[in-house]
Length: 278
View 1 (cartoon, rainbow, N blue to C red):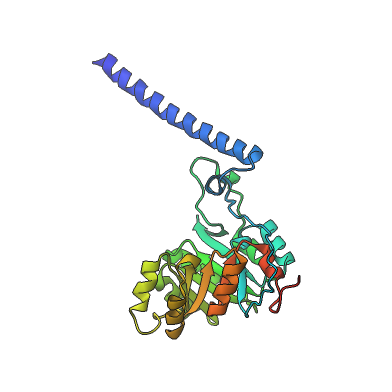
View 2 (tube, helix red, strand yellow; view 1 turned 45 degrees about the horizontal axis):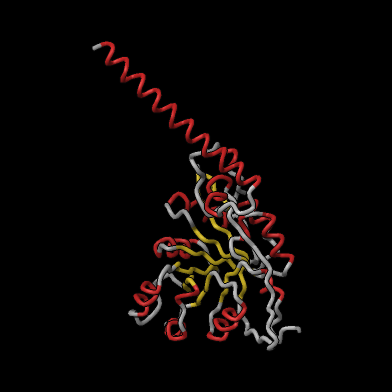
């Protein structure tokens, strides 16, 4: 019996050690790929380092002049890193998106939670205060809430209330209750409900008016048919379409009356509200 007990204990120790080594090896592999691999996935970069944003510049190449109705353009996730924020501002981005996550009593500008595979110090994400600093040049801040617990919301209210600004703040969340709470605590802000599918849009259209505490909807662009846009506008919703990177789709949605376009394509910000330059 003693030998059996010793064997089981040894096996447990070996198993725990093996798991730790495997986790460390995976973390090292991901870190190395991040360093030398240009095609490293968005998800892996976010999990290891908190870095997710991709920006690109693809201008309109057609021969027909483009007429862009007035629409607010928002740089997708650009506020999560200083480099992407400054690049977007360099293209005169009026709107900037910042993802907000609450970890360990601190508000961070990041899309995903830190990975358990690497030390916290390797999680290279700015605090929300830093993000507000380097996005000060934007006119509109779209704050996408990834944490909506009461502690996170209370911390966000204190943060925003303690930083008076002329910037228009738009809160985006999947949770209507969170939007209602923020709207009751913070004046002059807008609340957009995040909707993830065409079925969710159609469910909203079964109601005659807008949801309580909701000013607009943040919707995947592929769900927005002309009919849905018309019906949503009839119910009084502002519409934010994401993520739109094609110029023709941008023009189509703006012409339909979509209010906000969230994009990775920095060329959009260089387009005038009149005819595009040839």
